[in-house]
Image 1 (tube, rainbow, N blue to C red):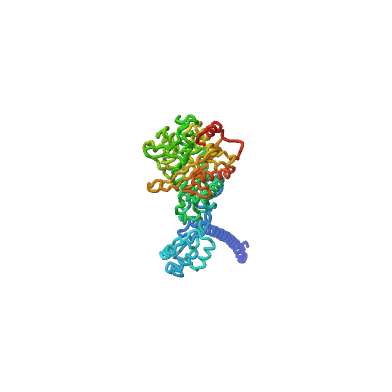
Image 2 (image 1 turned 120 degrees about the horizontal axis):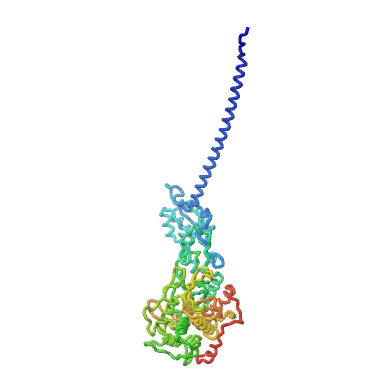
Length: 585
């Protein structure tokens, strides 16, 4: 029989089960791989979420919170204000981290009391820690219930004392604050930064936008100041102020070829690190913001103008030196120097009479034009915000005005005006604006010509002669060939009260060195120096301002590249016989 044999049931079942099992295990493997991949994706997403959260928080801290206590000033990578340096890279102003004292009235909760103790108790405790603070002011701020600074720049030991009070509302945010590592040095040049971080006075105010520009925070601003020369000038002026009991002083060192201000001092000074104490009379800059009649230091301008105009052509010509009456006013000298004087003797003895006569021959218009060319009729050219406006005689100058200006009265300017004028006298005749920025000599201002080179050469001879044989002897630093002119002017009273106080004078010495090839002008001015034993009973510039220059020049000369050389000097051989034979000798 050929009937088909039936298949075994067990065999079919095993076959089916075997196929189904393989399919089951294959699906299990796929599901496991998919689960692993999903878990990996969730881990990556989780890490990305946490990284994004951290990034957002860092950005918030970087931008800063409304409450200064919530963020640290050190969170940023760059300071909020760029550094200021001197011409050699010495830091003059920089940022540093410091603590402040912040009052947070919500520290104990929005519904709770702002302080554990009473506001009166806390205010009294804070005054004991910070004696310079005002109790009533602190109390008012604590009671106002608003978040506020109670004090900026808190020392660590002071913060510990405040912390010991146990007041959670008193917090200590760390912030970047302005620091002046050289203390009071060049304070009037730098100015300071107030509690709100804004520049006040000086270059801090002038450069405020540049110093806070985020794109340039890491780039220091180099000034023309040389901190070594600045220190020497301030030191010598302070020494002379102490000796003569002067009420103030000013000093300038100016590069005659570039107009760079190498040193600019005003005393008394102030500490820019204590901006809370900086708002007083000491912030007045006597070198650029206060105007004075600078006396006989103007006589070389008169002589130079007369040489330019052809009024003075022969140094041997003699002029009457007896008291001169003009329009009811008598022009006289400090003492009698003889019946006649020539030009070298006029400057050596500082004769008002002959200087007035030469100015009279020159004429008001020509003398006025010279003073305008020297910038004496406008504010000084300098980057500082505070610049005094000269007391300038308006309109045509009558005869008496011309004569008084000729010997340094009737026209009031700043010491910086005088420095710029002397630079033009000795550098070949070019007037240039002064600057507090470091200048490449190849790109210095072209300036404007005021005197011919030959006139400048003659004035250099005369200025050197004054220091060798005249009133400037005490400025004669050996080897440096200093030349200059003294000036002692009676100080005009306020409100047009005239010259009633005969003992109140402005004593000035205007100098340059080395006179055979001038590099720097040096100005030293003392406000109301007193006559005493240290000055042999004298109060004139020959006894107080000139010695300052005589001490400053040897200190700064080698630092500025001027090496003393006793074998060189200005050739004054054609002038020396005129002085030796003069009646005023």
